[in-house]
Amino acid sequence: MSDWQQPGESPAVAFGGIKRDRSKTMVLLDEMCYNHAMEFLCRNGGRMKKRKTLQDLTIKDNFMFGAVMQVEENCRGFLEMVLGFPIERVVISTEKSIIYHPEYRGVRLDVYAEDEQHTHYNVEMQMRKKRALGKRSRYYHSQIVMEALEKGVEYEAVPDTFVIFLCDFDPFDRELYCYTFWSECQENPSVELQDGCSTIFLSTAGKNFKDVPTELVKFLRFIASDLEGSKANFEDPYVE
Image 1 (cartoon, helix red, strand yellow):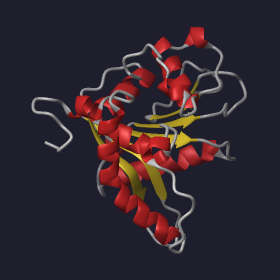
Image 2: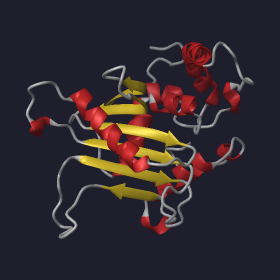
Image 3: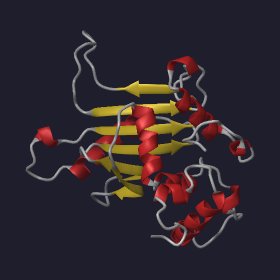
């Protein structure tokens, strides 16, 4: 039991969900600060930019997002809200690096989780619009499968993978909150490839609120908020 957790209190409650009891959140984040600071210094030749305090962070910050999603109840609740099916439990890693050879490009996943069915999930916070997000998602799928499949294992054992981009912009300019992609036959869309890969882009700039669950719309509005706006009452138990 962590020093910020009360007797009989679950880790998710102790953490305070996404917003509730921010002081406890700060204690958990303080425990994570040192390694992040040292890594930042190594990447920047020992030079520190203007310091940003923990109180200044919103969930859009990778550090805060990773801390929130490290709590199993938060991560599982997010996945169930987006995917629409129940998940019993997940094992979570944040900022997971997958590197197979120094001469080839590796990946660093913001949030990486696996459930009891060995389905793998990758959630990426994307603040700025970048080119080739589709090809990036394809590469992430391939790296996750390589990491999960041992030599000699049959293809039937290849795990299902979900790569989810949480975008603070509209990646396809169609004003949708959610864009879901999987492989199907162009000649007959009822024929699916069943390769187990699904890529989802969530957008905070969507406008089709009648087509998606209300709790997802509220969560995306919370993501889009600045520091002051994020303190508002979103009237949603997951956000609060």
